[in-house]
Amino acid sequence: MQIKAVLFDRDGTLTDFDRTWGPAIAAVLGELANGDDDTLAMLEDMAMFDVARQCFTGPSVLKVQTPADYSAAWAEALGESDHAAMLERIEATLLARCGINVTPFDGVVDTLKGLVAAGIPIGLATNGTEASARHQMDVLGLGSDFSFLAGYDSGFGRKPEPGQLLAFARHTGFAPSEIAMVGDSLHDMHAAEAAGMIRVAVTTGAVAREALEPAADHVFDKMSDLLTLALGEAVE
Image (cartoon, rainbow, N blue to C red):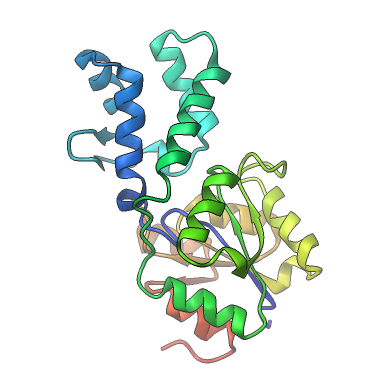
């Protein structure tokens, strides 16, 4: 079936999560630890993150969960009673730093521009905040290219639930079966399946091709292959 619109995940799909968010996450954990080495070590272990090196050390929940989800566990570990206030501080820190190191994968900008030039609407659905996603796309010069952009806080729910995806379908007026959902995680693929969309996985995130293939209709190692598919050409 012809692809009439494309919805993208953000982290691990359009942008390199580690390079984009590493310094911001380091700042968040440092602020929460407030100079206490033992607290910092505990938070690093929970986040699977090395503050000194500003990089992840394993399959961190930060790469798939929303800030509200992972910050709740931190709040409990820290004995913080006001979870909402702590989440607000975390999201403010992340938003202030989210555009400084935003790093798209090779071919992403050209692919998105190519889709728009071909008259194919594009959208973005992330488990991060809508504000951070909008700011990052603006930094990349892509803000005006997205006809739809949603975060976990936009009122459509969060992946792997299909709410964001179905909202994009309503926005475009196309049937879900005419829309491709592109992501790097099983959350993305499960959301696409629940919504009835074409499932396109990319191997640029933390999930290996072997794990993605059973859950996807197409698996690509480079984003440019998506443009080829959307334009109805054969993918080599």
